[in-house]
Image (cartoon, rainbow, N blue to C red; front, side, top):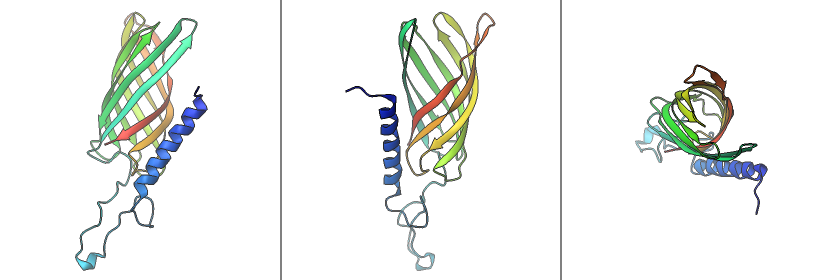
Length: 192
């Protein structure tokens, strides 16, 4: 069976929508993610812990995977990698990510990242990201810096969300040349 990009997108939307719906089970009808608690005057303890008010609550670990390919006149290359971060305050996640390019053109990148998602409790929330690190690709080596943003799709209570956006990036090759390596952001993020 051959999967098209449309099939993959539909599958990803179904996954994070189901994940968000499952996270809503057992919450009150006050709103998405609202905690159920007993009457404060009764002296009873809460039935469940309060749901996070926004994406990436303080203390959470955030992980993502990188998987892709490119095909052109120089042949086909595959990209594999991963990233991990820690929310130091609600919505603010410093982290590290790396990937390797395998195939006709080989190389990789290792970078520090800093991301912020507006912690408003919305299903669609804006995010920004800045990054900087070392890149080596097809015999060239240098520094890469970037900044970008987009929208994050998924309930704040969901552990699986989708990020869509754009990052403007510059690759400063050791010889002094600067190359535009801007790219779209399309990924699934998992929170622990």
